[in-house]
Length: 269
Image (tube, rainbow, N blue to C red; front, side, top):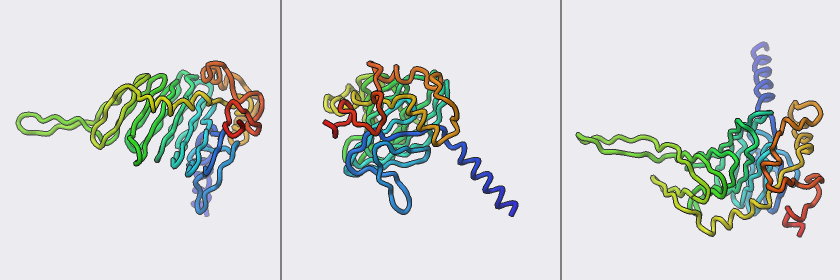
């Protein structure tokens, strides 16, 4: 009995400290699901996700605000896991796993010690204050496309090899690559290429201009419902998030996510 009780306490303690912030669906179109066993749950606008949730799209797409300062669009036939979601007054730690598919992302450079990574089957992308797109699918080329800012891209399963004398093959992992604004990195099976962005990829990222954050007060209220962030809204907790996300300082207007914003939601046009 004591052993069972100890295990239960340990489980509860682990669960309580698994993440401290949320993600919110701000636009849903078509077939979008939260992966659950045995049956997936259909996602609607305003639904909330927590750490370890997996979002799945079929013939649909979804915009998700991750924490207080980033928005990610998950396109058709894609799957994304919210692996780590933590933020505090001076720092943030977000790790997402793109299991398959394509995402466009905008991340606010709002905190001095912000860590934001997206991992795929081919690379890990570390970003800060960046607009970019990642594609990891079997139907198109796999790559990272940098619209604004820069990112550190760490390729997976690619090695630099050198033949030395006497005949000896020495291999080492490829070091992280700094991908700068206006460039893309394309992955092949055992190599990669970096070159300027194709016009078609720039066009695919135009949707980023429509991304908006929820009003901070509303995001704080939603976060309070899931974690122990008890107390009145404190602007310093999210210092600079909104101003550094939108050049015009706008959000999803003064309304809630349940209202229709024709400037944001194409279904309302």
